[in-house]
Length: 299
Image (cartoon, rainbow, N blue to C red; front, side, top):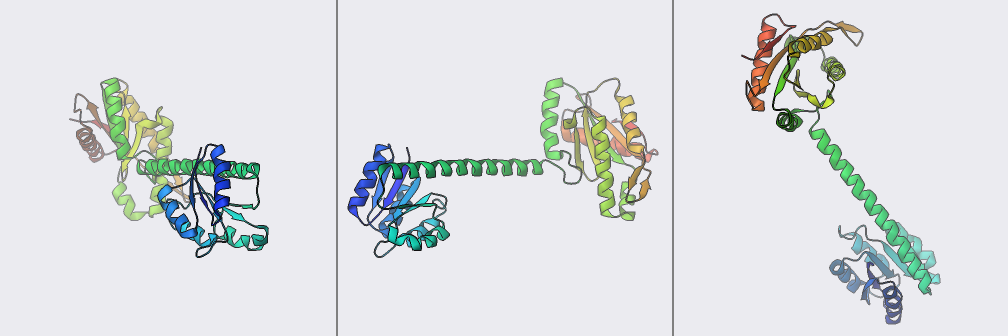
């Protein structure tokens, strides 16, 4: 069942259309001229519009133009009713955005089938459009939660994941990791090279971390990992640093870099993410100032 608006200056034609389509359980509204039709369309908000081409004062083409100017009706299927002698002008209406046409005289089967086909096509297009909107929204949301350079989840995603992990396990280690001397390096190397370097580091970290959702990039040269607070943590930290210390071959250059890592534990150090990040970063800074290529626990 659909809401259908029929516009025609012949009352007998409107009566026939209503009889046919009410038999198919459609809800009908009618208008006897173009201006009334536009007003009815705005008020009735039909699922489909049937409109005669030749009408006094405001013809079907003008009705179509007016309907398409309203954003609520811009996608509503519009079907012209036309006589055989008007077929030569029909291309004008199709160019204006009409969806179909039906020649007079027509039978119940002709009208019923035309309406059903057009409504099904419109439903399919509406579903496709809705899916595209949902996909675009999902991509936009994902982009808001992902770093452009490394492709890793960013600080916003970290907040949600940290809370869920801590609630699930009761304890958690927050690791802050950065390349040593990166600030000086950034004054000597082009931005493009640094971005490739950070992407390469992200790739190595992904290979090391079993759960990819535990790895984040929250700021320039600041990687964060969420790991279980276990006895193996010191050994894992040094293994991780070793992976990052391997040479990077970028733009026909070989870069030899080291990294430092700071570790804060929850709940022993804090249960607040921002506090843990500050403590882990302070420990990382201490590790770098002590020569780099090592890890430190928060004090």
